[in-house]
Length: 192
Image 1 (cartoon, rainbow, N blue to C red):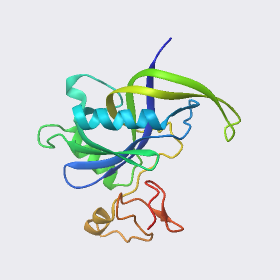
Image 2 (image 1 turned 60 degrees about the vertical axis):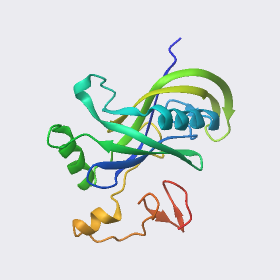
Image 3 (image 1 turned 90 degrees about the horizontal axis):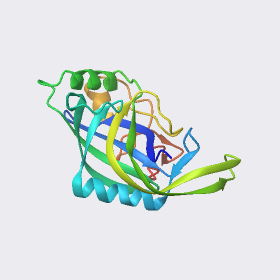
């Protein structure tokens, strides 16, 4: 049995050499799997204590590193991560990544690791049995282009919009810079 896992979630620019994003949630993904609250807690704990590398598309050779995931916190039922990018002068993928984010190209985050424990449960919304990953060991997080998690999306932070002289036609969350819809952030679910 293959115990590896991969979830794909949103990413956004948070300064010249930093990104923030949601690395995982308890939502059911397109593979009919979801993380439990316990799995999210263990993921946050591991990232805080050890950190993990940021790769592109789960390509794990050393030259495919994009940065380091150095911070994590639980925001509701989501794991919010802080990322420090590699030096853009020595890693040509960094300016390309930043340019894509500035252009509004939607990119996501995907976590990779090992499933230590799981269970099956019936999901009423999906109308079928799903696999709930209850304990995981995170190995890495990757930037990806096609998200598996239906909640995955990317927005340009307000600071970038201002610096690019783009008109902000929507309300932006002050915590994670995502869109606010009907008074609630559609990424971190904060009331704004």
